Every structure is written in C-alpha cells, then in structure tokens.
Amino acid sequence: MLKIVVFDSGYGGEFFADQLAAELPAVQIIRVINWREADKVISNPHSARKIALESLRPYIGRVDLIIFANYLLSLTSLKYFQRKFKNQKFLGLSLKVPDTFIRHDVLILSTKAVSKTINFYNFLFHLKRKTKVLNLDSWPTKIDDGELTATEIRYTLELFLAKTSGFNPREIILHHNLTTSKPN
Image 1: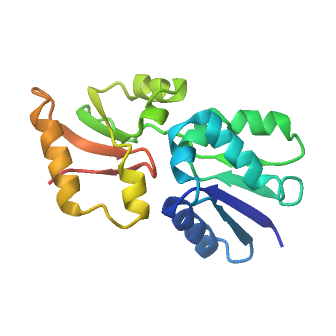
Image 2: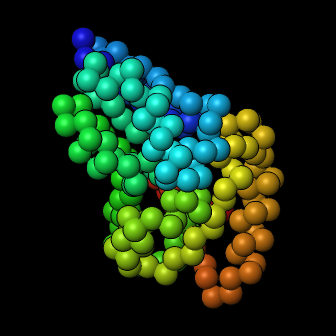
C-alpha cells in the first residue's frame, strides 16, 4: 500500500487529506498537521521550513510521497526539500492562473508571507488582469478556531472595496485553496 504524508498546520490540510482519502481509498494517508505552531508555519518561510523539517523527519525516506498542503512551504521550500532529500518524493501546491479568457478585475486574498514571494509576483504577472491583493493574516487562525464569521468576511471585503475606487472585481481568488467565486 502506498503511503502519502500530508503536511500542514490547520484545517486546510485536514480537508486536503480527507479529499485525497476519498479519491484514493487504496492509499494510506498520514496526516502531519502541526496545529501547535500554525502561526509560525503561515507567517515566515524560514520558520515554516524548520517546522516542516522537524515534523517530517520521521517520515522522510519511509513513505512514498510527502505533500505540502501549505502554499508558503510549496512556494518557498519545495525545491529545497527535493534537493536535500533526493530519494524522497515531495509535492506542493502551485498558484495557477484561472482558465478564462475574460479580462476583468480580480481580488486576491492572501497572507503577507505568501504575497512577498517571487512565485506570487510571477503569478500576478501571468494573470494579466487588474488585481488587488487583500492580506488577511488573521483569517487562517480564525478559520482554524471556527471564529471567522460570514459577517466579518463581508464587512472586510466591503470595507476594502470601498477604499479602492475604479476597481470592480468579478472574481475572487483565495490562495489557500485556489477556489474562485463571483461576489454577490
């Protein structure tokens, strides 16, 4: 039986592992979710890499695949892990340009740590649309704690959009799971 490790620091990783398990029932999914250090994993590439290394050390070389279900690690540390541990397969999430030819304004929800990476800048360049980035560093923790309400989401988005004249997004990209939706 193939063994796949999913590494993350919160519910996103749990959800990702659930989806893998549902789609690949013949594969053993091992969850390595570092809840205790979640803030460090999402806020700083260096601490995220260190925490991932400590958390994954028992699995490196003993499983078939390790997946980073965390964009910051995927963007900043995937190649490092692939070079350092050549006999272990690693996979990460990538930022993909939405499949659409319609040119319209796009709002991107991100964290500061991810939005400062070169890969994120490349993503924006290839998007070739008028974009604004709303950094929401407090949201991942609130989501994991079950404290983020629909009212807070709506208020935050309305406040941001009220401050940006001439910007009318028809699409929102959430970097955590790359879902896209059209605002009501």
